[in-house]
Image 1 (cartoon, rainbow, N blue to C red):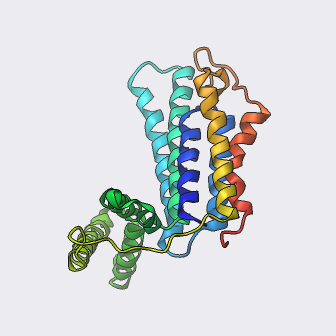
Image 2: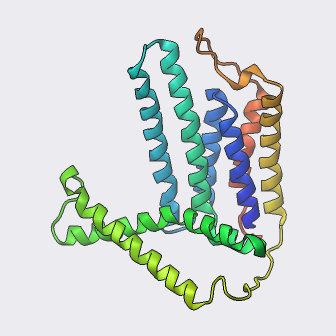
Image 3: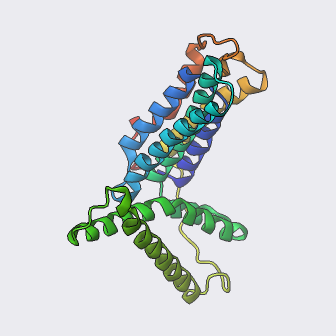
Length: 258
């Protein structure tokens, strides 16, 4: 799969997620992200990125809903907060899927020379979660061998401190390797351009089609994009909107190899 295909898929999936609070549209987006992750996840810490972002999504829903308790509580206000939290959770899930299926350094290879530094920062940012997960796994295994159980809250510092230290060491190592290669001081290495195959083109086309449907509805203020909470009414949905959301699942039925 061409990295650009995954980038377009993630961007379009994010646009669809933030354009609506209708659960009949958000649930298909979440389901699409889930099955794409299951079909194309890479082995190693990258595969566990999806679960991490999904858990953060659940935390976001709980936090956003709990904030309603600070003010007047009505059924409408609780449902509105729940839907807003769900929208953010779905957005995080889409990003988690992208993190688990795409090579972050593919973004770096795609960037023009003048945007190499911002692309490098983006690639490093995308790789933070997998590297943190891998570091946490190594530290937890080491602590278990020492007889330290890190499931209890009191033992969390025994896990957090070594993970942070490991992250700092990796950052210093990366900076030293970049400096040794003359990053920023000499000509950039040229990579063989990856071609857009059928799978990448179909993935990009399906994702763009989904985004066009929802952005078009957002422009014309389609009421189906938002669920009415004042007064609280049952959300409306149509086959076109639900089908457009499920277009994000198309990559799950395609082979990544081209």
